[in-house]
Length: 576
Image 1 (cartoon, rainbow, N blue to C red):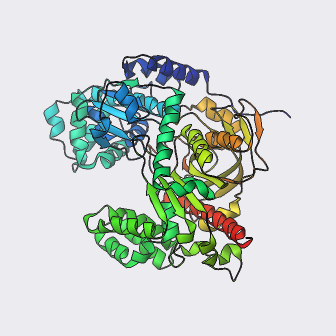
Image 2: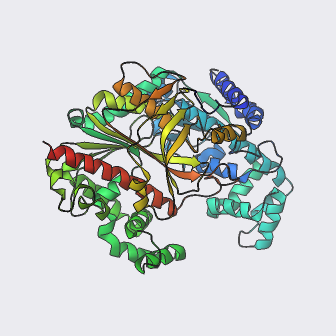
Image 3: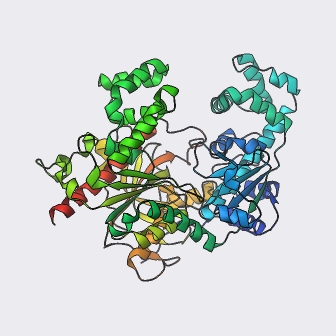
């Protein structure tokens, strides 16, 4: 059988990675400036204008959304697997520093209030993510800094975002379009002028240091993560488990229907919030002018409402409601930021479960939820990890949770043949980490998702490629990938499949082989929703976000997973 796989990372990307890891072996801090030339040389699809003197605002915004806001004041970024690693390196009590977060990337980081940022990493993939992001951010920051020298600081501070003339002048000085400037205004909001003044004042010269990059430390951090779960819910080791890698909101929302119980209050919030677009969407849904589902909309609005002073009480109310009906949340402690949830199926409240999960639709006309009371199974849902962390986490889960009845992976991806919001269902995955091509029977087909997807298209029988990092792709790699029929570009499927191999074979996963994963002793399903279209310039999450319409694909895939689990559990329980 002739093997057809996408090329490995290009020579320029290989050179970039070798440079990063050779520098990070140093016991001293490394200046990001050392990496700028080799970073620009790889011609990243996410940073196509790295060499240009003109700013690449899409790339800068992509980095801004995935770095803590304090990065503008930081001198050095310190990477380690756990609090213990930092303590052994001489940095005691980093968790007493201010905990800071990024808008679009989950990573536990602590800021000392002055010039140091300490971040927990779960695998090598975090390094492959953080270092290119810091480099791209610094390159683009310094471009803007250089252009801003044309204006004195006092003139910058006197600019007004409400003045079209002022903003046109600023856009001209920065050599960017007014549209790009407006995107920065949207992100920085009232801090826009102070941020522009900050860029004028300070050239960026970041440093980075890795404390203990050993595989042992990654495993130790993973053990800390699992011990926290097992200590707080010891029964997990003795009951059947369905494993889901998704997010922390869609699965609990569907299984509790909490937002649906507060529809009147949420509708009142919408009427008073002043968001014309969302209010119009809600009115159109009620008038059946659009095919959107009201449940999805209410789940989306609940989170926005809970962020307001008048809606804050629903945070505690939701937590209590979830716990009452068998949903337990376990935030990570002293290591990487991956929340876990354990859901006891027997304790769910059938009266509030999302109506789209009705047993009549998967178990027959006269079926009801009574089978749940007889179930001893759990759902272990984790906030999907980044890259290689998926492998170590699933291996650790499988060591302790037995039997595993099903493994379901839901996550973001870039699509080479679709649009943002589409859903992609692969049955072949090439993994750049192991260089394996995995072939498997994905339990999902288009018909499992399409009834619940309004704005996108479902594409099954696709081929996915698991890349090393978001910045570690270029046009050359994308062209070869697409030519070989790989249309789904993501970061977790390969590591998960490497772990799946070890769950039913007696050896460690192979390297650089075609691997047959058919006839598994458990259910396997992988669903990706498209957040980027890298073959279309600017169509990435630096250029925009999925916003409300991302809810459509998120809940369509979540429904497919939960309906599959409920059907399997119904059949399993009824056979007893």
